[in-house]
Length: 397
Image 1 (cartoon, helix red, strand yellow):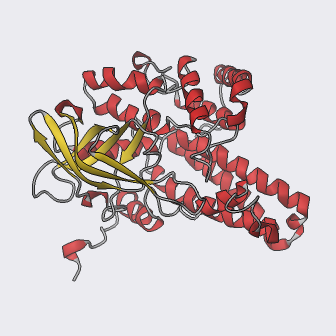
Image 2: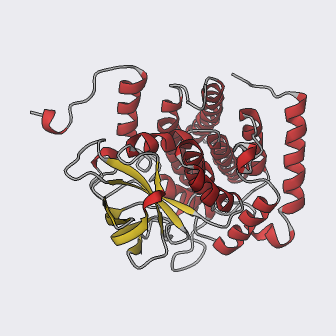
Image 3: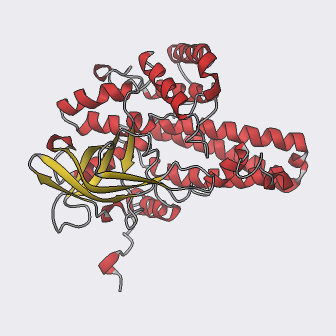
């Protein structure tokens, strides 16, 4: 586990910090600290401009190989970047899914033509992506997807529905896990297909959340089309590609997420000291436990990244989602306890919420999206500990 950084890496930290301090001001000052939990759909146009500015300046996709426009940054350098970005109040990244999921997947599994077509526009903030995995009957059980794609005269025709699609309205492309083999089931017969969002065959229905925002959406495919060559990997091997994408999701960006959590914790702690609630024994204990949880989260992430080999994350990565989701949900509740009666009062009617109120409401979903806590425990028991698989489907008597 690497707890210290080299002189060269600290010089890199200074470079990152200096660039951010010089650029997160002027026309970009309004986006500082925006786009976090419960705030994802705010200042979208301004944040898109920030993405483009970062791309032109060479500060997107820094972990990508240099031949694809990245900096080939080491794990430690990526950790440093995410830490400094969050410390500086860098806004929530509109290009996050393209940079950390779609891009690395195309680099690892895509054709040279796909790499040439898609990677530059992701890096420059010119095209944005969303993820087409979950369906109404296939959330935690991803292998149960029913969306179908049929090859007709050189084009895939896609029919079905995806749900919980983050920022679908703002996206130019979606990567869709769908069935391309008739009568297939489970992990067999799936393909990973890149589909343009702007076409008559796609309908987007926003899902209004407790925060009053609509980051999540339903996406309906009614003979939506994409070119035959937009399959990533081989036809029928979509499960392997999809699992590769999920592996990238557990990578270095988790350190940036944790820095955002620490900023939220510091806000809660500051208010607790100001209003005197930090003197209440039960709240004092919760604040202490939250701080300890942050340290554990960081050390486990560093261990996970240090033990990764050849782009494959270690077993410790399987703990990550369960741990941070539970911790963040508890932080939201702690924030309301610290605010006391004030937590019941919004900024103004009808539905303008404070930062901490939005955070609390959003954290209710942490233990559900991206795999419920129950599913995470199954993954840990089966894949990390080698325990027997839980009976499923026809195996249940």
